[in-house]
Length: 532
Image (cartoon, rainbow, N blue to C red; front, side, top):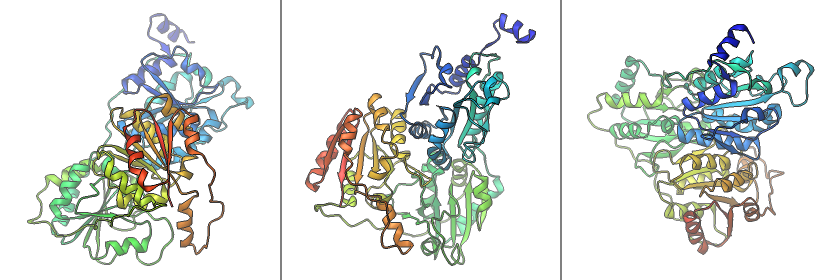
């Protein structure tokens, strides 16, 4: 230690890196550490502060999923601690999803002692800052132990800047006991605003439109845009489509102006937008595609605008005018502008036909039943790709911040995310709708739900295979998809082994009663629903 540092330490001006980090986290409103500990992380938790809690996940991807759900629900970055290279590797699938979800996370991982790094010791991370790229916004291993708290502060500010996303800090094991200067949290803006002239131009285009249409993304709900979007759509009579494969709901799906969910295919998007004279993509790309298509990307005669806080989405859009802006503020600015003399007269999607009770019953009957019995204020966390169409048709989302799903197309996020969402909303019912195949990527999250006594209702939709691949195989002209059968998994047994209650239902006549009982439970309960 230098003479200057020694003098400061004697006068009480210095603290350990560990103490400085926990002081900083308190100031940032963070009191939980999500993690799965390893040897290179243990010194961080010496004399663990009583005002913090450690949320243990049994595998690192589960840890990231829980933190993702918690961060989205609290609107603040979650703090995560992983185990060196192996732990970051395990976590990468859900780090990718958090990046696509635009979820603010501060991810830390242990590293071996600085004095050993040149000798490639056991459990060290080679090029530690490169490992999580490109799916973190910023990555750092501080040059000095004294710089760790400042690096964590920077990681937080970057994670919370638009567009939100994960950041990463690698911390050598011997850094935590080093003395350093405390770091005081600063106020850093978390939104950007479009120029007034750009808002004026879009407002004028909306007022002149005869058949406006909105395509909305997850940023609407994430940035408090639900109410201003509803007001704007009603004022202009704009149809509202959900952008393909988004992770949040930004508009009441039972509203007369709600048109439905755009498919992620070029030809289908053009077909649905044909006849409109103005389209505004709000917090969404222009557009999201799942497979190569043919023909134009937008129908002829369509004027296109985009509101996004993502410079990459702005740059990759194939047409239109982009306003780089936080979506919530842009929507409020548009609502504050004068409106048209009268709204356009347009009608959204028709109600789906009733599904009769049959045995075996389809997943659409499950969604219809759940819609009838659940509280509209309950929160749905979904990861059931093959059941997404029936869910969108029969289980409408009616309120802001009551729906979360994965924006990346990966699996293993939904089940642990439901645990994080429930941890952030202790007084609200959380319902996890998870496919049988999806659940097995992160089934260990049931244990954390049981340990935390979270009254989540886990609904496992059991169709005995990766059904979504059978749907997609048809697009490629395949008669069948190999390696997709999943028979013989005892989901109720797995739930009970991890401390949750569990029940299996196969008959339509028992479905409503079984679900009602599970929704009323004060313990985590898994309902295995066998669908045909």
